[in-house]
Length: 226
Image (tube, rainbow, N blue to C red; front, side, top):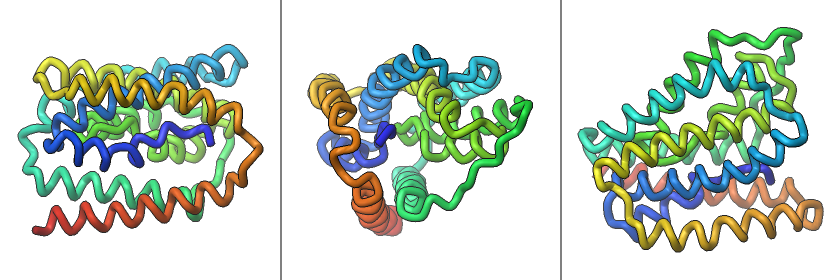
């Protein structure tokens, strides 16, 4: 589907790790590795706007580091509420695709920097690279074409994920056994998924994953309220 889907993986990592901060560090590392393979392929095909990467990646990295280093000071209930909000947005985006492209002849770099930092901050704390939050910004606020937005999104997501992982690793908030197991599944899974492109209904897959994310979001929201 061209998505890293760290939000779909995150609830399982939280359950296995037993700690939201450790799950965030583990999950964001797996997401970064998955984004790297996709980003490399898009870069080779010329579908990355390096000017936007140059403006968006540094504040994304800064935000991810801040979020990764200080995410632990956020109360667990608030962190769960943040996870629920991210999952809900991702689910609604997959179900309804509410954002439509607004292409510009000259993509805007100011919004790239602002959205980069904010999304990086949330992603570093929660443990996802938030490609589905960054994509609407790339399409509408910044004005990239859909094809270049996909490649640019993955490259920025990889750099964000790498920085967030480093920040969590410095605080020893990584479950290394889960990380190894996650990489062992995610990397070949991404490869097999790429080979299976076109064999399944993308619309059906998006709806199924969207419904699953919304259901999981409700569970996290209940946990946050308790």
